[in-house]
Amino acid sequence: MSLTGTPFLCTLAVLTVLALGLPLALWTRVRGPRAARTAARVLMLLFAQLTAVALVFTLVNNANQLYDDWSDLLATGDHVEHASDLGADGTGGIVVERLPRVRQTFRPAGGPGMRAAGGVRVTELTGRVSGVRAEVYVWLPPQYDDPAWRDHRFPVVELLPGHPGSAKAWFGTLDAHEQLLPLMRTGRIAPFILVAPRTSLLPGVDTGCANLTGRVNADSWLSIDVPRMVADNFRARSAPRGWAVAGYSAGAHCATRLVVAHPDRYRAAVSLSGYNDPAAERASLTGRDPVLRAANNPLRLLREAAVPPRISLYLSGQEKDGYEDAMALGRAAKPPTSVQVVKLPRSAGGHTMPLWRPQVVPAFRWLTEELGGHRTAGGAARRPTTGGPTPR
Image (cartoon, rainbow, N blue to C red; front, side, top):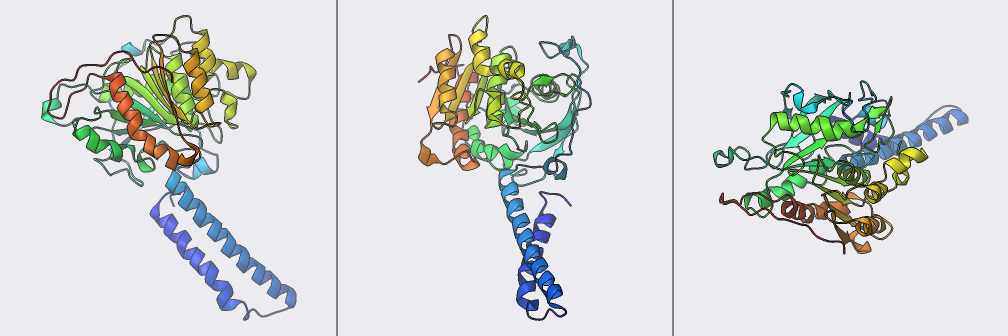
């Protein structure tokens, strides 16, 4: 029975009601020695507590989409087939452009929100470079199948969740596609292809979206295999001009790190309540070793770049939850790197989905300006924007 499925939730609800009713119905009817009666009553109380806790956990998990399935919850799932040493550029010497085109089969994605706003589709991708095998969710903008747009190539945003977190969370909990659909239809936001790859690749740990020889090649999965699959199957704009990454919490850290590390693959990043030091995430593999910790800190990468990368960063956060790290990146940035920092009030909520959901539309308005080159709903060409916002 699926962890996030309706049958499991309904079963838990029935068991919870039953568990609450048992003590009421049988408390005074238990027979036998005193010790046996006490044990039976204790078991009834424990049964009631366990079912109630399980029901609440399931409701919270479904609302926030923390764990996709039992293997995620029990930390038994492993999506890494092999993790070779791929070198500094993450390709292992493979000329990615010369790889044969791969055609994926997509199916409608199940789960809350997946079939709203035009439908989210999913495929199982085997990364030819990274050695990762995992699901990738894709949502196409309303213009994609419009004959008037048949020759148009669309910008792409990779969407990354926190840890723990499901790749579906941007669609099922943040409702990104539902929020953006009417704005894309009217031309107020560019029609983006939204791509959400799995980031929980190893049991019980956060990969930090890094390549770790012998463990996981998460960077190559996200920045090489997934983009190549999208380019092979959809009318996507070429990198880096047409590509961006957005994430919240641990996914925000990944978004910033990927874009700073690979300005040849991405043009922009959106970070919602992110951090620079990988050790901020206790389960992070890259935060446990001093060398890896330094090598995967986007602030250090930005400071030590031989040439300032031509990238744009949108960083939002509250005091002591992303804001200070965002300001540090803003101070370190030198043209042509541009940074926009948005300070969120404490009254907006804590480090949770209700804080990030209202930020989806402002972030995509910014992405529209940064990636530029889109057309209005009427079909007229819009002038691509140049430059970018500055730190504030």
